[in-house]
Length: 117
Image 1 (cartoon, rainbow, N blue to C red):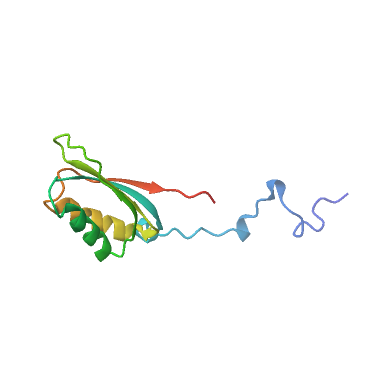
Image 2: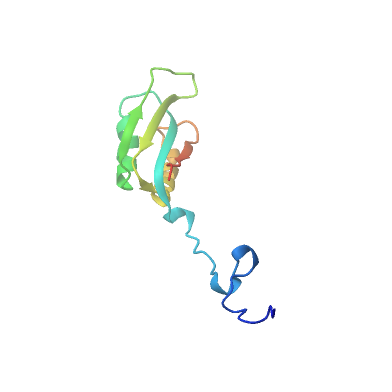
């Protein structure tokens, strides 16, 4: 049997055909989107929640849930925010701006929520 006969129509070993593969398009992280959990260490005074919510809204970030427990450890009051789908770039912009404001006492903690496929 001639193994070279009709070699172009056969599937190569392991099913890999490098001539048919292309490099995947990699998007910048700022263009990805998803839900986020944000934890702010806020100053315990009136108007702080409104300031944080307003700043998130300026970047088009919608809040799904927000919680501020009555707990002051001296390092600020924790404010937990769960967002609806938002772009990473908008989240980073809002968090950077909020961290520079006088309503927070520490850098914001950010967790990306990975939804099951």
